[in-house]
Length: 307
Image (cartoon, rainbow, N blue to C red; front, side, top):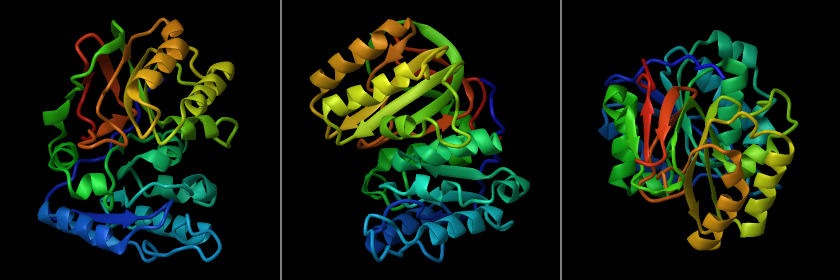
């Protein structure tokens, strides 16, 4: 797996667009997130349909067409330096193939931030644009607008990425050891759902795979991991970082499952790495070469996430 192209870091006054590729966005949380970004001396702009709701399917932020148009419009706008997702939910996969990837490639590299359902777009940006993206808190997320740690780590990654090249989890090692590879991953359910999709990544070979999820029963997590294992998707993976499992069936059950399913890979596995659906979630760049020390609970980037 090759390291991907790194977008430029942000500077004061940079324009950032906030889009809603998946679920509907509460207006009060959007405004709170925009206020945080203004406090960073950024110029945030909400996409035209960011507050839309689909008439028939209320779990979607507007139709697939308008969600895709907002994302593509923001990405192809030369005045926009970064595109931040407002929230996750569900819907990114429905609109991913409506995007004009050639036009987005021609627009050049920009910063892209999101997590959860946005995992589908992280994968698409990696395979179709060859671009480093940031798995981090979203502009209208409650875990962002009310949490200083999440805000501070994302801000440092955006403005001064050389200050956060070592990310420490404070967690334990499920399987001790060190490994070097290129970071990738996201929400476990979305990675399993991407199997067989157009332009989906064929495997995690050569990667340091980051996994997390939310609100899943243990048998469902088992099914997702087993599906990826049976598909050969883990073959050649160098190491695994486990993030949060918020609202799943308790840390003991989840830990036992992950030890059972991942312990036989023969690679280091780090627990409790502090990214995903958790309070104070850290920002993890995807597509950069890094070293995982599962024993020490650290991820050390070979270079800053942004140039």
